[in-house]
Amino acid sequence: MGTVAIFGAGVMGETLLSGLLRSGRPADSLVITERRPERAAELAERYGVRVLDNTEAAAAADTLVLVVKPQDMGALLDEVAPHVAPGNLVVSLAAGITTAFLEAHLPAGRAVVRVMPNTPALVDQGMAAVSPGAHCEAVHLAEAQDLMAATGKVLEVPEKLQDAVTAISGSGPAYIFYVVEAMIEAGVVLGMPRATATELVVQTLFGAATMIKETGQHPTVLREQVTSPGGTTAAALRVMDDHKVRAAFISAMEAAATRSAELAGG
Image (cartoon, rainbow, N blue to C red; front, side, top):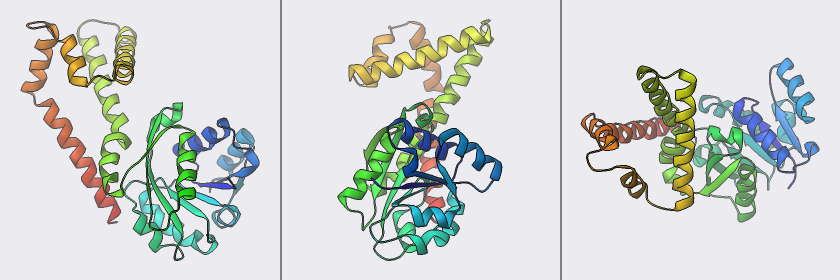
């Protein structure tokens, strides 16, 4: 299993750290990097892990998990590259950063894995898609999958699908929150207290997601079960179709995938 160093102590970095600890990884096998001294002290006290600078963490690690913004990835790779030994694994959680980009900034032959996580990892309900690089062996891929399984589900996908993954599950929680906001506002417009509308919408969302997951039925079938001919649901869905809501969602996700591909190009 070895030592895991997490580079970047933002929301996702801390989420992964806490998930690994909950899953049974010993604190002395985990390292995190953080530039702000007060934040570093907070993490060390809260989790009992070492907080090192980037080069120290890279030298100590068997697995390097890079959780920084895409625009910061090149500089971080150049900083840690001299300390990435043969057999080490480099895992990137940055949107749009390809395995080819990672490999180009590391010594030849190093194993890399590209990951697209999402924010429900905060509550151990994340969805992470992983894609191995050219030099990634089965043991490396298994380690990356094990890391991400600490905060939710993991799925291996061909790297050519990662921009689509970013659009669907990486950015996906924001679309759901957007719809929830709109449904709550509708409740308020219809005269409900905001707290009541919120409780109704959140439980409806949770229940609907659970039905999809547990029944195994296609969403179309489940939607039709709710939609009585000439009823209230049919009236609402007709308005959504008039406003081309389905087409707007598809176009939005295409835009997100395009932006992910642009990030890969710098």
